[in-house]
Length: 307
Picture 1 (cartoon, one colour):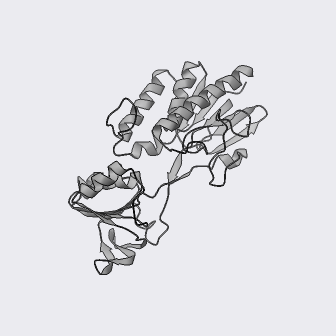
Picture 2 (tube, rainbow, N blue to C red):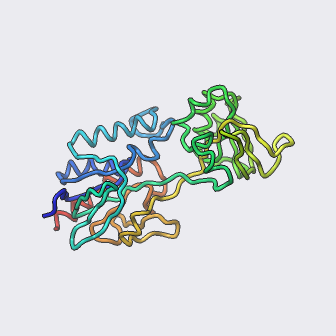
């Protein structure tokens, strides 16, 4: 038997991966958890008010509780990217960047999603110098400044509300003529005097010198296509993280989400997937990701029991 051998390896430390670990521990499955950042994108959420049993909590605090719960049962957690996954005979070989290798009889892929980029000139150049994708991380840096938030969903609306507690003015720029986020957040945005909503507008370019100074818009706002800002927060959604799926020839749907059945089984025997990376988690909420993680762990347990 190879060294560093486990019955199950869970890749991902977001809500789905950590819930899978909790359930795997309760099923007495010898398993390992590997992930780059505790909580995934959920940890970036400024405020969560729809997780049952918790009236109000930050995303980071909630995900820290997930991690504390998972570690309570003793499962080892490694903070690392996974470089490669291969199937060799009846085992899965998982390689980390330091060439450390682990083996497992089954996998749960809880890979989550990655932030979408605007894809405009200046975005990459000014990343970390006024361009950011995390209001929770960077909002305090913009106290009494002028900033812009790009997007129209829940993440954009809540980011604007958080920034309004620090910044002097927040422009909320959306390409459509109305927001797509929950009505509750829309109402709070409309009530906040620091937030200015700009609809039916796109950003063509992000400009500055050492840091961001202005946004170039595709239509005038107050008679100018130049909007002076000190920072821009990009909140336009996410795409599934699928770099490992190609190595395993995992089936994806037309939108590049992992195809799973009702048991969270992929097309490859012994490989399960859970959370926002799957084609079944349409709601894309912490609650639904965690529930898929629990189902994936149970399905892995049944698979391993048969083995």
